Every structure is written in C-alpha cells, then in structure tokens.
Image (cartoon, rainbow, N blue to C red):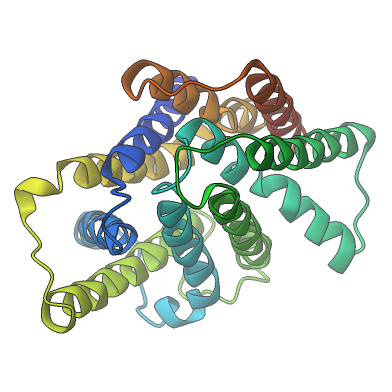
Amino acid sequence: MWFVFTIATLLSWGIADLFYKKGAEPKDKYSHLKTTMIVGFVMGIHAICMLLFTDMNYNFANILIYLPVSMMYILSMTIGYLGLRYLELSISSPIQNSSGAVAALFCVIFLHQKLDTISTIAVLCISIGIFLLGVIEKSKQSKYEIGFIAFMFPIIYCVIDALGTFFDAYYLDSIESTPLINVTELTLENVANTSYELTFLICAILIFIFLKFIKKQKIVVTEQKDRVGAAIFETMGQFTYVYALSGNSAVAVAVISAYSIVSIILSRIFLKEKLTKKQYAVIALVILGIVLLGIMDT
C-alpha cells in the first residue's frame, strides 16, 4: 500500500500546483494572501478532524514549540503563491522543489555534515540549473511586467522552505531529543503536522480579518474554487505522505520529489504554457538533481 500512497502524494501535490497557478491573479495584489487563507482553513479542518478522531493525546503547547518550523513553511508557501502571479508554473515548481538541495547545503555549512558523491552531483545539477534558468529568464522577453524579479520569488521560497526542513530535522530527529511534548514514536509526526496545520489555521483567521475588515476586500466563496482545490490537494498530499514513507522510504521520497514533472505536464496541457527547448533542458537537469537527492535522502 505504501507505493499507492506514494503515487497519491505525487499526483496530489502536482495537481495542487496547477490549482495554485489557476488561482493566482496577477491584477489582485492580495491574491497570495487569499490563497494562504484558504489553504489555512482547509488544513485547519483537517487538524480538527485529527484531534477529534485520533488518539494523539495532543498538547496545545506544541503549537508554540513547533512555531519556528510552522512559520518557515507558511512564509515560504505565501511567497511561492506571490511568485505564481508573475511566473510560469513550469519554471516556478522545479525551483521551489529544489529546497532539499539548499537544506543539504545548510547541513554541510552549519552541522559540518559531508555530502556523498551522488548528493554532491545532485546539488550541483540543481544549483547550475537554477542559475541557468535565471540567465534565460533575464535574457528573454517575459510576458509579465516584472519578469526576472518574479524569478526571485521561488528562489526565496526555496531558501525559506529549506530552513523549515533544516529546523524540522531537529524536531523530528528522535523521540528522545524532540522538544515536542506528550509524543510517542507513533504520534510524533502527526503531532508535528497538527501543530503546523493549527498554526496555519490561526494565520488564515488573521488574514481573513485583515482582508475583510481592514482592507475591505470582498471575499466571495464561489470565486475561490481554484484555491479550495489547491488547498484540498495540498492537504491530501500531506496526509498520504506520512503513509508513503511507511514502506520503502528511499523509493517513496525519490518518486515524490519529482512531482514537479506532474506540474509541468499539467501546466502544458491545461495552462498552455510554452517554454523554450533550453528551458525544458535545464528544468530536466533540475529535476534530475531533485530525484538524486530523493534517492539519497534516507
């Protein structure tokens, strides 16, 4: 069953990217906040269901304990949504999904860990690929007004998300060292994920208050279909991810890490995005690096 969950995660996150892009409105300066809000509400619903229907013995103090990790992930996702207002999904998704390479570099720099040969090659593939994508994006005429500047949003996402992963390693390394309280080997990941989702829910409520009562924005539920779709598939992917890792985690991580391929295929079919041959070649290089990192992740 673990492989079924692996494919489910791959498809869920790839489809979520498509809906994220469809819900990104270049002319709406609050588009990224609206997406963050909807994702927060959907994740909050999932968190409440976990609290009601599972026996986690959850301690709400974990929201504050896990806050550094949660905020890195939420901030990175919000910045990613902002970038999608101006950049093709085919370019944005592979760059954002390269956060594993940045996390690896953080481990080398700050924890003095060493990369094996394959991981080093993977990091080089991703780093060179991102650099070349930036060069290509700067040299071509973008259909978006801020072109190359928009290219920086997924890179910022990548760095902040990598920080979240870096912090996460500390929280989830072992049951003995984790600062999370009232956890067991069986509940550790669920407690961390629920803390993240509850924090996302709090952020969603604050954003709703900001948009509705301070900025006087009209928030029509029927106009949020794409954002709701993105949020549902994002949350589904998170749910199935845990079960995907219960089998052959090395294979699962490698497969899931390539969900950008799904995003690129869907963007080509449904969004009619067209990239140059050079861009596709460089994206293939980045995805190769991501898959190699996924294989070596465990």
